[in-house]
Image (cartoon, rainbow, N blue to C red; front, top):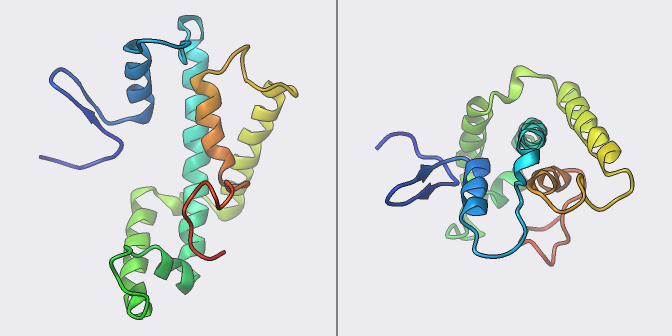
Length: 167
């Protein structure tokens, strides 16, 4: 019962509804491979995760606003079960869903320029941390994975790796 959120990991002795906590749980229970959460870096990785969350929130806010101004994007956001011929008639439903998400994520608490500046700041910090290397620290960690999520906003992944509609 209660509010539903994803992602979620629910088991006999665990109930986690946050990506960071799910990843930490998986890291603690891994059976092989290197740690994504080295104990000496937990605090720093938490900070990178917070940076990723802030930038993702801003990117989501910008996306929602742009979707609301684009009937084709609203149509594309509809479930695939809705036939193409009927999609234009259902864009109002997609817009209603987008407005719900705008309220849920408080997308209008900052201006679009403030959202863009926040993303730019976080990516500038990331560039400095990488210093031309492959990882934020000496090896792959959850800090790298959390910030990689942010990169999908200014640099979308290739269409061959992610199913998207017409661009």
